[in-house]
Length: 517
Image (tube, rainbow, N blue to C red):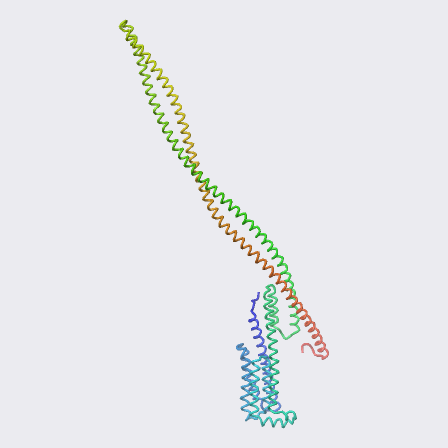
């Protein structure tokens, strides 16, 4: 893709190329003028050709050097004008000795003005006019007698009636007319350049036709001498531009449809985001309630764990008491065994005493009664000891069962306490995770609000883009109408040039001139 240039750059390039063309034309005119006058003087008069040849050599040398160097384009016309007048002033000073006719200088002045008119510059023309008027005053001052003699020789009644003041007035009026023409021409050229620059910048806004327009500018900047072919090329370029604008208009229309679809989709997404934000707020409220429930559950689990510790402590205390009770029962059982043993031995002693009292006869009756009472007491003691032993044995069994149940209860309490601790740890982990979830939920809520705000901005911007695109379609339509009108005019010019080419071919055929001659 070609590099896009600004209006100033395009205008500067055009002015430089125009100045180069003007320099070339001035160079050719100067060459033809001085060489022609030198040949004329040499062939007719036989004298004066050296002066014109010298003038031409100096002027052409200065103009050629500046034209080749491509530097100081804007001051080259002034240098050319000053060099030509400097030569004329020097020649005017020497004319008193050479006897050069004064009207020769008038011809030179008009020639200088004609050369300067090639550039069509107001300031340059004003400077040239002032120097021309001053130079003619010098001619009048130095050659008054020569001018009167020449007018008398010419014997022209019109010249004889005119004086130098009238000539100056006519000269000023002519220069003023030329100045007005230059002024109007510059204004028209300036307006044309500005309009062309505005058109170029307007075309640069559409990237799809930049290459075609720049190619057209390149073709227009490289205009050749064959004007008909360039007009044909301009017609083709105009058709391409019309086609391109039509394609751009179609693209804009399809782009508007696409932008509207994007706007609809964006609004739907925005609605979904809004619904998602509302849903998230509901979830956030539920999460807050869940957080409160988890906190209460954690407190209840902590309280249950404390109660389980108390129950565990009470069970341990009861288990110790039961162990002590079992130990005391065992001691009583040992005592009862000792009592039973003593009662058995006492019974044996009572039996032996009864046997001995029976042997003693009457003397042993009292002892027999005592032995009987002792034996009965021993049997009663043994029987009571047996009953107490049975009761103690039953108590021992029940105590052992209670101890086992307490131990089972202790294990259950330990297990429940472990479960309660693990449950507490689980609740603690859940609460920590829920805190992290709540924190991230807050961040997510902020991001969702930002996302909703961003989508609202996007929807508004897309609506603005849609309006601008529709406005662009209107502008492109107006430009397309203008391009169509321009294409019609170019087509008319092309047709005119075709007719002109036919007429030229007919004239060549009638005159018998070949096309290559």
